[in-house]
Image 1 (cartoon, rainbow, N blue to C red):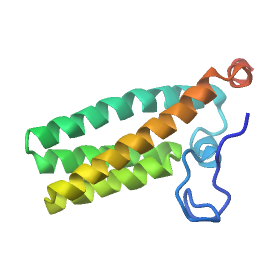
Image 2 (tube, helix red, strand yellow; image 1 turned 120 degrees about the vertical axis):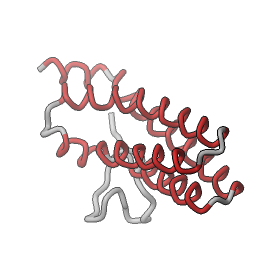
Image 3 (cartoon, rainbow, N blue to C red; image 1 turned 45 degrees about the vertical axis):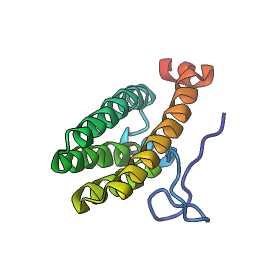
Image 4 (spheres, rainbow, N blue to C red; image 1 turned 60 degrees about the horizontal axis):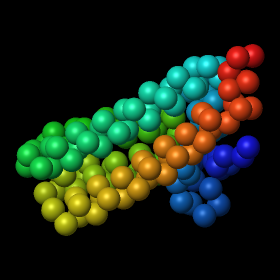
Length: 139
């Protein structure tokens, strides 16, 4: 099974310069090539991304832009850790929009973050369900 990877020198950017969904090369470096650790980190990320997005929404609903920005910042770090560059980029948009105070931009940034999160979590889910990946985890 093939996954989207970065092949350029800049994090997550391919020839088209759009951030990658999941940079497996980066993920492999961060987990030192340990497939079990990689699997565990990806499982944690999926759970973390869902709860973090919910927390951002709660902060926005509670009109707490400082907490929304801080929570988005946590998402940036988690996404960068696994090479989920689109999630990191859209979480940065949320952070900046929350700091700037523009509700329309914040709503658009949150929608983009939600879409990027769904996209990377689908890629991760496919990877975790792949029998070849599970066999490599046991090796």
